[in-house]
Image 1: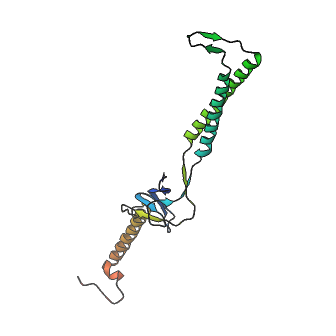
Image 2: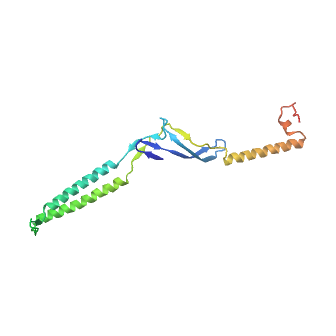
Image 3: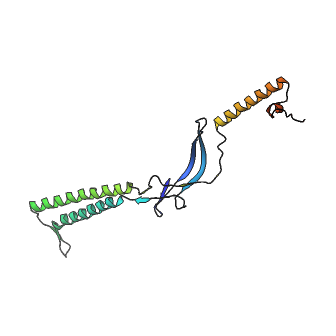
Length: 191
């Protein structure tokens, strides 16, 4: 079974057919080729598309945005000043500024991991076509098959053939022709 997202249909291929012989209870299993058609006579069964990647992507986007925002705040207290002459000067930072920069970088890294986690989860999610149970479908066989090849049917045929042969042998031992034994009384076969 496969799902087609564009048509929102579950395409179901038939490969095996299992039947129960009513007289003997034998289970017959055959290889067949075919497919299911929905109530609208189109190949596959109509379903409902269920895609759960939306919330995962939303969480990844929120995490990415907050990670970028934390990166901005960690860079706003830049201790290095560049002059037009190409000389750079290191400015002393207060303990509060260093603490704020450390917190911003730590939060940025944590939020980046949060975004990566939800991106990986979204990649693992697959959309699904849900098909309601109990719907009527048509089974379409694309190649013919025979149910007469069952082991039990062959065994029953063999037993029946042996019983007929024994009946014929018994009738022949009585001196009558086998065909005469099965004809209504008073009729005989013409050779």
